[in-house]
Amino acid sequence: MRLLSAPAGSGIVFRRTDLDNFEIAAIGRNVAKVSYATSLMRQGVLISTTEHLLSALIGMGVDNVIVELDNLELPILDGSALPYVDAILKTGIRTQRRRREYMRVLKPVEVREGDKFIGVYPGSGYRIQYAIDFPAPIGQQNASVDLAAETYGASIAAARTFGYKADEKRLRDMGLIRGASPENAIVLGPKGPENGPLRFADEFVRHKVLDLIGDLALAGRRIEGHVVAERAGHAMHTALVSRLLKDRSAWELARVPVAAEESEGLGAISVSHPALMGA
Image (cartoon, helix red, strand yellow):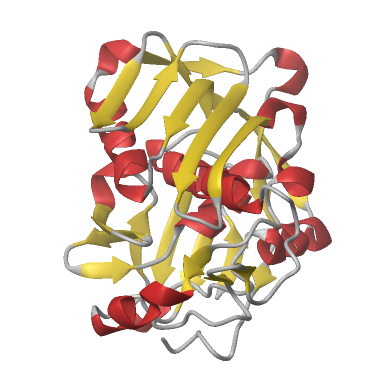
């Protein structure tokens, strides 16, 4: 997989080099199926497991990039967004001569499903509050993040995906988590992580924030507002994007102040993971 610089205003675009450079924009209308990962599809062409890369790009302030890959699945790497962040920092981000546009939230937009909830509200910056309640040994965790304070790389990027050992066989029988292993996920047994130590005491909720940032990238622009989520997941994250995009009265396009007026693109990056690139 390679990340290439793109012209200002391009947004984030995936390119399947194995299919005559077929392109799929990272936008809500292209969301395909959402289960244990988020997939995009256009004209029958699929790209799977997009959320970690999208999260890293939004978290690091990258607006315009072409993502080249030669199969349908992005590499999971270590189960977090940290390898992407490290590659971005190593390569560098290029400022482009075009004012960055945000999606400024003007009124509340919410999605509810039983005891699950997610909503976005007007507010300055990009703030996220997330609450989870999983079976033992996780239990309840809460996180609050202000992305405007440039905290992504230190507080969110390294949080890894996780799963329960007891669920592994059922999920594999369903054709899910095919590439999962102790090298790219926290494996939870009855007494706790079987492949510890954790990177954060609250790593589980931090990873949910990571996923949420990646899924909300499908709004097409960085959000200016306050997001609150309780026991949500990929399906509800993307449902919020869909509802937000459909209600044009709920947001407006806003440009950043002149002092920081330019969008940012990316130099060329190559990312590979031998165990997963052919999955």
